[in-house]
Length: 318
Image 1 (tube, rainbow, N blue to C red):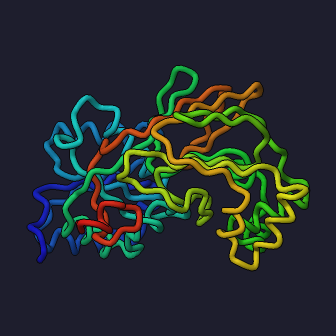
Image 2: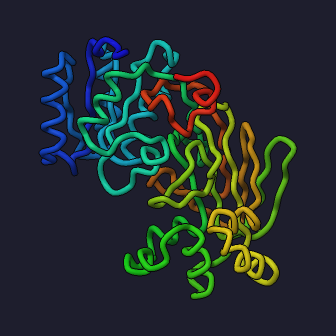
């Protein structure tokens, strides 16, 4: 049964997609269906924050992030750091655009603009968690995933041709390790009942499951369990490299499972003697200390009823 159209929505559109004809047509189609949909375009840092504040002041019911993972996190952060509860804040929708749509892909949100906007119109918003990261006396919010190590190096250093050649996470790790392109980093990572120190080449703290264009760092993460998923990949050398190589026949994810350290925790703290860069949905943050907390149900979001990121959905439905 189709729910009643949202009384009022506001699309906060990344400026890079301002000339997208498919988006323009989708907005027109949704307006024709009875949805009151306004559009605001972001051109510089801080625009999303301002547009969300204006939307709340105007009594908008739903704010829609039109862009990739960075745009989603920027809009979600603008909601999350306010004093209002999730129930009183506007709900959050996602119109996946741009090159990095890892959250939308894992969540099963349609890539076609009209289908994505129709999903927001026709589905009830459900509570989802966000990650709250503190570093250098500043607070950041993450909707999808924070990564360190290879992820940052791949994003900033790896040639596009090499990325295409190597493919998914397992191939990136193997290929770059063999080429000597990954320098192991050292840190102490601790949380409730967990205390680890050592070298790593990849680190993932996930609310969502994947980053970097499909690299499943936290393949079992859920957005509604009140917990973050931690993945640490130590250097692939010696026995670990041999184990990784022999299990590649079982699939790249299975191979990674054999060598990765994984935990599900409410919070983690990361400390390093040298500055460490974490990539927060495309935003690099450098520090020697990080504190990351999972904030349960901090916003309400429109997701498919069969969304794989919802643990509750699998049990009780939307």
